[in-house]
Structure formats: structure tokens, C-alpha cells
Amino acid sequence: MNIFRLTGDLSHLAAIIILLLKIWKSRSCAGISGKSQVLFALVFTTRYLDLLTSFISLYNTTMKIIYIGCAYATVYLIYMKFKATYDGNHDTFRVEFLVVPVGGLAFLVNHDFSPLEILWTFSIYLESVAILPQLFMISKTGEAETITTHYLFFLGLYRALYLINWIWRFYFEGFFDMIAIVAGVVQTILYCDFFYLYVTKVLKGKKLSLPA
Image (cartoon, rainbow, N blue to C red):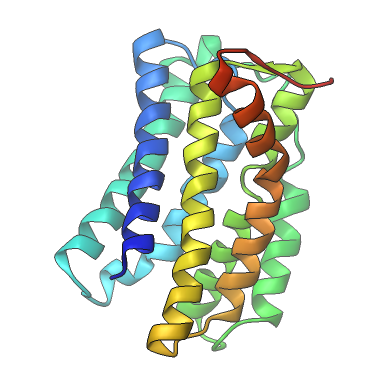
């Protein structure tokens, strides 16, 4: 494992912890897109089905379990524990416009036409766009809490570091995964505008505001 993958994993874990702590400490999920969190739970579920069939390392297994557990814990907090604080009026992105095309693409473009491989590919494609409901929600409300922007920043950083990881693996290990790289590029591009606003506003102590 190279340093870029490790720091990418840690950034991803930091994002998840930031979000969970934000919801738990404030006893509120205001400003958080439940739809994005459901998509991420679906991503981890379909990607890590290999937990039932193979063992790579203790680190790998532990991280997979943490991601799945935290994803469903977040969904539980949003839709059950703190349901009264969930802003469903602004969380209106049509997720079927993401899931259906991604599902079709996973059937058409994959490494191997087998159930586990198709589901893994589906998870890669879906993760690249799973944040769209959250970004759409922020655009509708016109602003985001600082803690929410920190969550988004670390989530985007994780994806950017994983892109560097793929480049590293290509040059030093001869490993190349076009599906993961293209999906990672798409996901990173979606964060570019947010990264700019994060650096120019949030890091200077200003509240992130977007045109509605």
C-alpha cells in the first residue's frame, strides 16, 4: 500500500467521522442530504460483498466493515433517530436518474460479466455521482454549515488522493484500472467548484454560500 492510498483512506474515514459527529453532537441532520447517504450505503454494500468470499488483509477487512457500518449508521440517524430535523423539502434530487443509468452502464462496461464484478463496477460508477444530491441540496438552500463543508472537503480529498494512487500504481506496479480512474476523474471534477469555494471562503472563516 502506498502513502496516497493510505492518506486517501484516512481522508475518507475523517469525512465519515466528521459527518457522524456533526449529526450526533447537534442532534440534527439539517443540511445533510439523506439521499446522498443512502447512495453511499448502497455503494459500500455492493462493493464489499467480497467480504463474504475472500480475505485480503486485516486492514482491508476492518476498513470495509467500518465504511459499511458508518454508512448505515448515518442513514439511521437521518431517517429515524433525528428524522424530525431532516430537511426533505430541499433534498429533492431524483436519484433514479443516477441509479438506473449507472446500473445499465455497469452491465455494459465491466471487467468481467459476473454478479460480483458487475456489482463492484456499479459501486464505482455510483460513488462518482453519489454526492450530487448533497451538492444539489446546498445549491437549493444557498448555503452550507461549516462542518458540512469540512465533510465535503475531506470526501473530495479522498477521491483526489486515490487518483494519485492509481497513477502511482501504474508507474511503479504496472497496474491500470480504467473504470476506477475514469470514475475517479468524474468525481473529482464534481468537487472542483466546491474546492475553490472552500479555499477562498471557508478557510478564511466565511460561510459557504451558493446561488440558489
